[in-house]
Length: 484
Image (tube, helix red, strand yellow):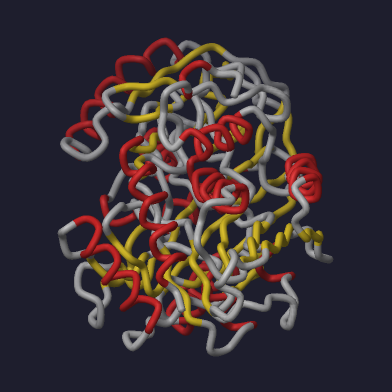
């Protein structure tokens, strides 16, 4: 534990493991260094450990004395994190540690994501594997890779590998709630080539940046109607086209498929002498957009600066990109009729990267109903097909259907009530947990998910409530002791 911010936090073992995670690069698809470190950590403690073909780490711990006949339990979390930072941050996730601070009972990463999603879950599991005083049946830790970039680890998990028939997933973000179901989803990836044209004579080049939005998780935060930087900047450009001739050079926004875009930047050419007037026009647009987002996402800013470019996008291509992005769906499509207050189907326009020679954009569609996500994805594909643009669906994964008769849930609720003297809540989450994929490979597995309180996952400023981590540890160890 090298960062003094962790000193004194309880339980110390959990926070020591999380400190290690903060110091170790673990972006999606580059978790191998962390995974191999944990493999050696497990072997050094006499635990059985193996890396499967998908890159997941599986660690087994024998039952404590007298508990050999108890049912086996799988403890599951994912190793990777969403790596997001503020535009003015020089943080390099490939080498720099995440350095959190303590503020009012929360552990916070100020300029980057914290990785509490799902690092706290991993730390809880490692602490359970390390603690020789716990009472428990046979334990298996399933630490998956590539969750945040497409559930690759869970997808690649083979049936027949796991021995336990009960699973505690530690990847939800509201203390006091047990999760019994989640959304599934898929991606729609759009690509289109183009031919650049020379910068028109007499035009000057400027750059418009839209920043300051809250961002957040594209599933659990989608219902709040936070601003989408890509959609808003495209709207600004469309309105600007009605004021002055505009030639698009590039448009870049968003940095993760499953995060609400906080920032977007467009480079464009306008007739000479008009660039200076853009500032006042943008001030009016900024005021208008801030008014629309009042009480939801009030930090929006629009700024213009001088830029350079020698080429622009062909006018017909510009119309296709801006028109299609403007028309593309984003946000909540439908609320659930079966689970009141929960989003059923949604879509996030998460990333765009467009240049004079072509570009790409990405949509992430979620739904509690498989046919719902596929239908919305088909609409997006059809929209782009109108212009002959290639759009491809990929990475479909199933949702996790609730089992209201879950014996594991009933035990979790009973332990929670006994130890915390308050009733817990049972929820379905509009986010993709690995439970659905794993449950699909292991029919009949009884699965429940819980975790500490985390706010701002997938965005800079992500934070975890320290007290809820201690309560999660108490709950986890008590559940393991009671499972028979």
